Image (cartoon, rainbow, N blue to C red; front, top):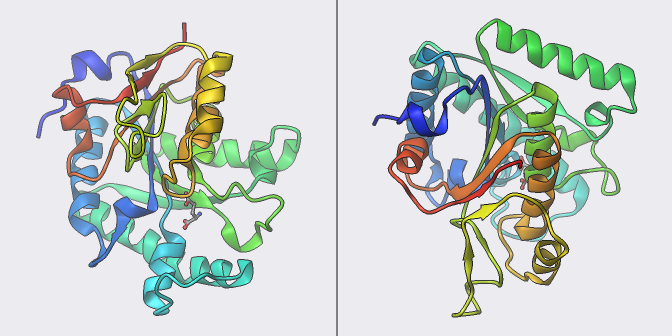
Length: 266
Ligand code: GLU
């Protein structure tokens, strides 16, 4: 694996990777090989002086597995309980795999409150902690604190949390590793003529309308939250890319020209 630094990572200092649940947990359990490939790429970035930040979903999925809950519908409290169980495993997975490569990780659990600049103290504490972790060469592994996030206040998806973390850490690029290869003007699963959109430089009303009409049930987020994340990134002067994340070594694939959608501030 070799990342071609010159194109994507030129002048980059901090990058955020958002991992959907299906990347870290599959039918056969935790996807350790995939996480290992990401750790390898993080190691390469660190050697180039670039600091990675990870926003990972998967606590509920892992917890369902551990508690043998299958795919049955769960109440909010049951999901929170599954998350509480799964979050331990999620952090431990990252710790084990990254530590083998001599990379230290930290668990950071955020809430709406601690990611809202209006709540000065909570927000500033979260910003300061992440900044110190990055200065210390530690990779923050971030998720929503599902246990204290009630229905009305939870993000529920990590696309927007990824964009918020990108803003809080002053990141240059947010990578949304997803189960779709980018943005389409219609749901490509049900519309054969769906047109792929490789580049977005501003969120026009047409793009917003596209997201609203998309019925594509992508993870828990879908296109709406991805476009919302893109909007936040563009406003913060951060690039964002949506790409298929499931195969190993996502950054090397991206460098090799794999299909994706870029959001690039003007
Ligand atoms: N925070 C939740 C978890 O870790 C899920 C968020 C999402 O689906 O993106 O399971």
